[in-house]
Amino acid sequence: MAKMQVAKVTLSTGKIVYLREIEIADTERAAEMVAQRAGDNQQLMSLFMQKALLQLVLVQIGDEKVSAIERENVNNLFKMAEYTQLLRVIQKMSGGDDLGKEAKLELVSQEKTE
Image 1 (cartoon, rainbow, N blue to C red):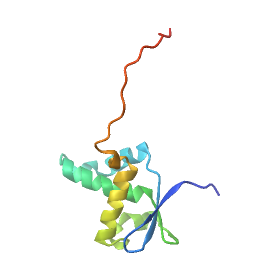
Image 2 (tube, rainbow, N blue to C red; image 1 turned 45 degrees about the vertical axis):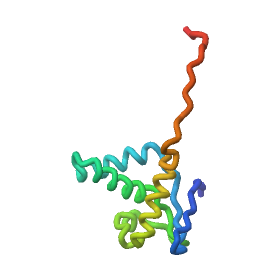
Image 3 (tube, rainbow, N blue to C red; image 1 turned 135 degrees about the vertical axis):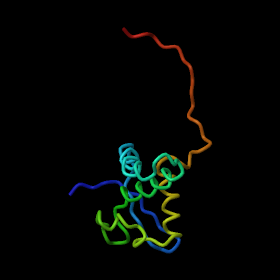
Image 4 (cartoon, helix red, strand yellow; image 1 turned 180 degrees about the vertical axis):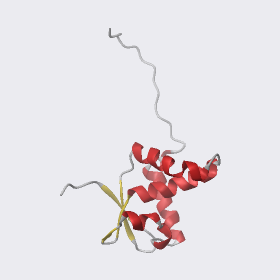
């Protein structure tokens, strides 16, 4: 069986959650999943997308793999405090902890290639 890299998250309640790495395609899929429901409301879109991303990358809770059906209703899996902590982790995993940090941009001369 192939192995994948996962993030092990220990919540303040002691619950251990495993999340797979977030890919660009996950953000696109999450947007597609929630676009119709959110409509033109950007705040709802952001909120719904965070939940959708969690549902997409959630692999395991403790020793139990999480099925696709179980991922549909995170209310049954997590308390509100746990859910909030996981949303913060999702934000960090998707680069949200780099807010305020800028990529370095330099202008340099380079030979043209034809």
